[in-house]
Image (cartoon, rainbow, N blue to C red; front, side):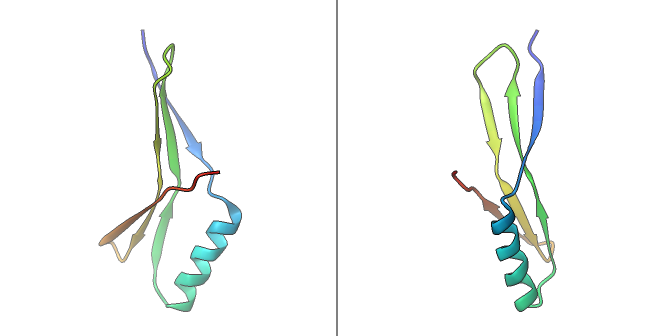
Length: 67
């Protein structure tokens, strides 16, 4: 039987600092959510859910950072 495994995808510290500085400079309140790695056990199928930035409850920006 396949199971769904969800792991947190860590946000790079430097990227988080840059985003927070931009938000503070522009006086914007936003919510930064960490992405996830979703995989199925016993298979090689995986999905990477990118980090999202919700600005004023309206706009969602996905942040996909390649190492």
